[in-house]
Amino acid sequence: MEKIVILTGAGISAESGLGTFRDEGGLWAQHRIEDVATPEGFARDPALVQEFYNMRRIQAAEARPNAAHAALAELQRTFPGEVVIVTQNVDDLHEKAGATGVLHMHGQLDQALCAACGHRWRAPMRMAKGEPCPACQNPTARPDIVWFGEMPYYMDQIFDHLMNADIFAAIGTSGQVYPAAGFVQEASAAGARTIELNLAPSAVVSQFDDTRFGPATRTVPAWVAELLAR
Ligand code: APR
Image 1 (cartoon, rainbow, N blue to C red):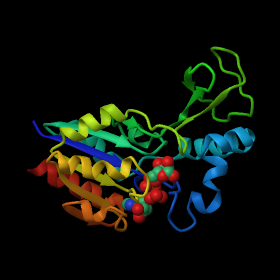
Image 2: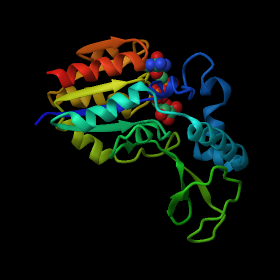
Image 3: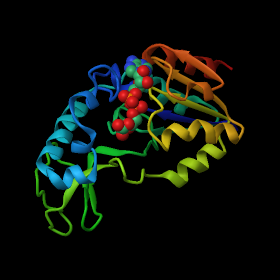
């Protein structure tokens, strides 16, 4: 049975209206990473950080999955082998399109985490500074997002999937943030065939066996159709 491991990034949600980080006018052009995506930034100004994620949580809740998300869910449903989706995205558009078992290595907007007791719960649409944890009552609730300097989630499972992948695909990611940007090297070393589907060449494009350039809503359905027609 063939195994396909797919890594997605902000580019797959771009055509659903959710901003990417490093494109022209992207999120990191509007906000400083150190202010809104680090533990230090949260400690310095929790209200600012909660508001940054409130805005993104509301946008993500209103966003609809696009043809690329739908094609990956279809691949998971009908491919005769195993299809694992690992995402750097914190939106739930893969799940809204019907994908299952999605590994959110950078966390999820619709989840909250208690910095004191580690309790996780479904995040309210808006979280405030000093939000109480429903389990330990401390004012230590934070977005369940992996910030720069923190350990991404599910790394053991992800490396295990990469070691056993026959095909590794990276979709809509600029290949500038590790450990995700190093996944192609791990998969290649373990013998997988690798493909990049992106609007423009990523920073690690040279490490892929195959590349498909264009918007995800065009390249991903075409790639899935090829796989299902084999
Ligand atoms: N179709 C396909 N690819 C697209 C599209 C599209 N419609 N629009 C943009 N892209 C591509 C861009 O060319 C770029 O290579 O998506 C990529 C987006 O790159 P980034 O904005 O860097 O997003 P990502 O790679 O997901 O960032 C990784 O960085 O800031 C952290 O935690 C954050 O998860 C994020 C991580």
